Amino acid sequence: MIANAFRLALVALLLTPAAALAQAPQEPPKSTEAPKPPVPPLVEPALSDDAAFARNIAVIRADLSTADALVKERDWVDARPHVNFPREEIYGAIRADLKTYKVPAFDGVLRELAHAVAARNVKLYERASKKVQTALVAADFSLQARQKDWPRFTLQVAAAVLSDAADEYDDAVANGRVVRSVGYQSARGLVFGTDRMIDAVAKDAAARSPDNFKQLRGNLMRLKQTFASAAAPREAPAAVETLRTLIVQTAALMRGIP
Image (cartoon, rainbow, N blue to C red; front, top):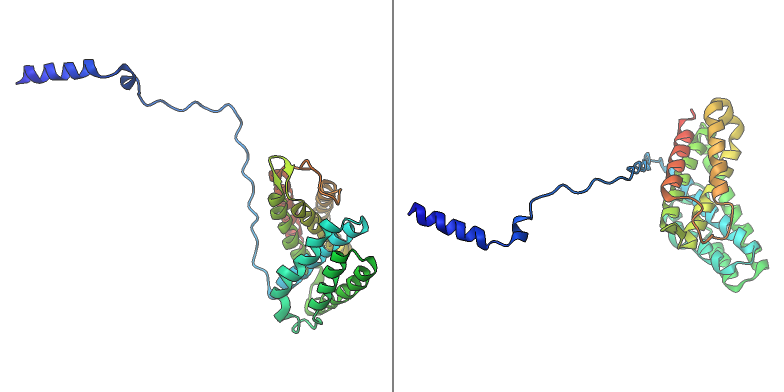
């Protein structure tokens, strides 16, 4: 019995293909490339109701500022999504809060603005734009009256607004190229809008934390240089990971000013 079993095993071994015997588990080849550093996450602290409303107002202002820059260049096609976005995506979220913040309804003038861009009518555009800005200024005054520390509040809102730019840019870029111009332009508007918010409280913020503010200013300058062109370039002006890292650091500097 044992001899027969041995002979059967030997025959089976001889009949087994050599390729099957060679399939021993092997370790995968080690990569010679240096590992990429992890992209820091955008950790968004919870916003108060006032800060959330202010953030939405700032995003509306950023998109309309982008549209304004494009209208000045008579780029009506690219301007169109930026005048539509505030009405289609944001206004509905703040409609119920307008009474609380004593802001007159302005959905009608947002429609006028969108119509002016669609019609490529500069006079209508300028008229509607002034009406929208009046509503946004009313929101600013109301918010400011509710805050005990307006500079600190502005820094927190600016950090939240800037963080949105990283996501917009990420959505705009693929394989080192700008594949979605509206995303690039939205990111640009948010960066420049944030810079204007910081300008408004610059004196107070610099006095509170000179070193932080100096670095903050330098970072914002780098971000503005990245988005120097209002028109979307073909080649991405910065790697997605690089830009996100810079935005995370800049937002942290804003939040770090007491």
